[in-house]
Length: 161
Image 1 (cartoon, rainbow, N blue to C red):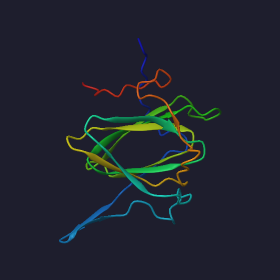
Image 2 (image 1 turned 45 degrees about the vertical axis):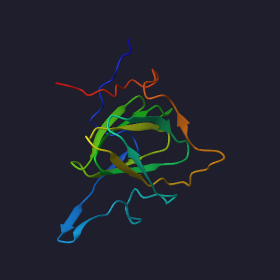
Image 3 (image 1 turned 60 degrees about the vertical axis):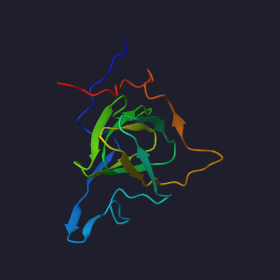
Image 4 (image 1 turned 90 degrees about the vertical axis):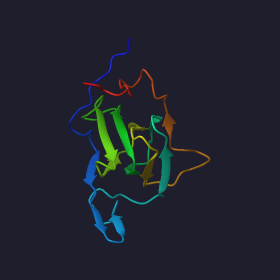
C-alpha cells in the first residue's frame, strides 16, 4: 500500500504566495494578477488559460528552467506541489493550496518543483498561468509523471474528517 504524506504548512523553498485583491464596482470587477514591479516577478514568457472539468486531475509535471505563476480565476482547484530538488532545504516537502473563487491567490512555483491541480468546484475551473519562458514546441521544458505515481507521496482524493 502506498504511503501518503500530509502536506506541510510552510511553503516549499522558492514558492511564493500573493493575495489577490478583487475590486468590485457597479460595472463589474477588476483583479490585478501579476505586476512587473513585484519582488518575485522574474520575467514574462507568455500567458495562457487552461480549463479543468470537475474532478479532473492535471498532474504531475515540472520544468527545469521555467517558473510558473498560477492563479485560478473561476471555480476552485486544489494545487499540489512536491519538492524533489537535490540540495533543496525543503526536499521531499509537499504543499497543498486551495485556490479560486473562495481564496484569491497567485502561487509562484519555482523551476524543479513538481506540481499539478484538481478541479474541486461543481463547475469547470479556469486557471491562468504566466510562465517565465515561452513554450518550446520542438523541445518542451516539461517533464511528466502520472497523477497517481508512486514517486510522489500524494493522494488526490477528498480528505474527509
